[in-house]
Amino acid sequence: MIKAQVLDGVYVKEHVPVRNPIPYTSLREADVMWSKKIIRKLDLKEKLNHPLYYPTKPMADRKSLLQLIIWGFENASKTAYEFQLTNPLSYEIVNPITTQEAMRDLGDRIDTIPVKDIDGNVIGDTVVSTKAIERTFEVNSFIMKEEWFFDRQRSVMDVRIIGLAPFRVYENPEVAGAFLNSVPFWVYFPEFRDLFAKTEVFNQKNDAERRTFDDLFWKRKFSSYIIKESNVYNDRPIGTYALGLEAMLEGEKVKDFIFQMEHNLWEY
Image 1 (cartoon, rainbow, N blue to C red):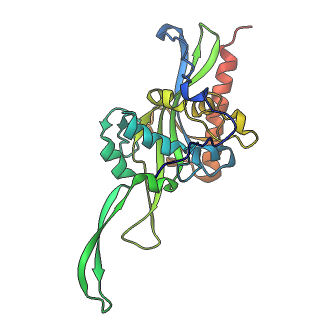
Image 2 (image 1 turned 120 degrees about the vertical axis):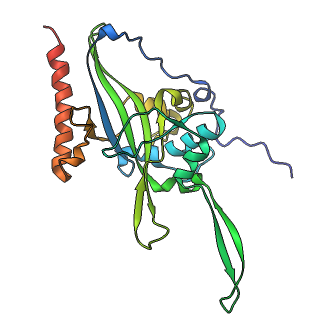
Image 3 (image 1 turned 90 degrees about the horizontal axis):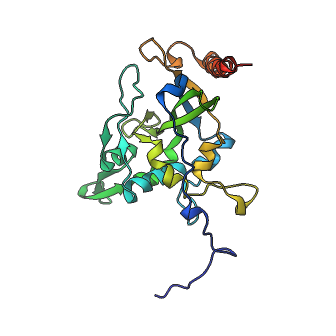
């Protein structure tokens, strides 16, 4: 069958597919006067984060953040890193894992289902394969690791994202109505920036002015809340000593501390 050569639009998009990420400013250890590592959580159900969550199935002109990450593993030789399930949780990005391991933890599986006749007797079995790309709707939030620092060479408070990790909530196959959660892997953010810079995200107001994923993170066009800061207490997250509204207020205290630190480091 011959496919018709059609253009889904009125012009050929040539700019975004060849874009490169904005390079980071050179940074020396001697110029960093202050720094702090922060762990955030991005709830993809919040309206501002919808461009990261939708579409739940890949479309011709766009992908969700997780679908793009999976594409990077399978087609661009990107690396996944182990999310260490220690107690308390470790947020280090150190141990690489294979794409197969990452996809397995994200929902890739092969099930053998018995086949029964009309009398209920087992007469054989069938193999059902589930792909992780079909389960991306189960990831409704991301964990983000970043570092804030004051660069005295430029006299600015700056931030760089270090890693992203999908947070998966899925139904327990052994207990009906029960749900489990897991964090399948880390991705090293700088490694993915070239891919993020070449992929559009949806702009609700103007299809001709779509941002890229790299633009979205660079310009901080997302909603998040702080769940941990670097500390002396064995890396304990905020959720281990504050819950609900108190935990949100504790995260706001960390945010305010960073703001005050920037203010205090300026010389007038």
